[in-house]
Length: 102
Image (cartoon, rainbow, N blue to C red; front, side):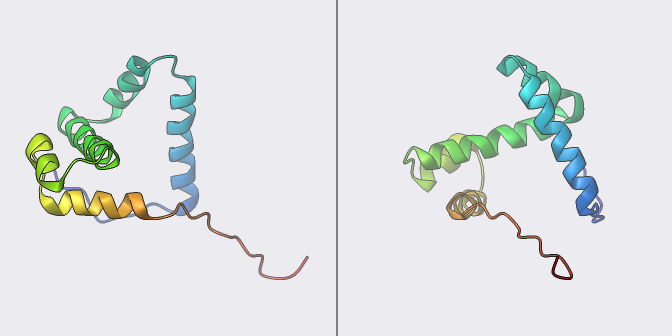
C-alpha cells in the first residue's frame, strides 16, 4: 500500500467529506451499494485492510482470542490491541463553547 502524506485537513472540511460518506451510506439500498460506493474511492488493498479491521472488531466482540484473531485475519497482535482499545473508548461528542456569553 502506498504511503500517504502527513497533511491533515481542516475540521470543517473533514466534516463535509465524512458527511458525504454518511449520506451515501444512507442512500444505499443494499450492502452491494455500500461496497460499490467504497470501491469507487478505495483501492483493493485499502478495501482488504478495512475488511480485516472490521473482522478484528467483529471477532473481538464475539469473544475470539487474540491468537485466533491474528491467525484468521493475518494481522499483528498490536493491530488487535489497538482496535480493542478503540472499542473500549466511549464515543465523545466535543462540546463547543462560544467565546463570549450570549
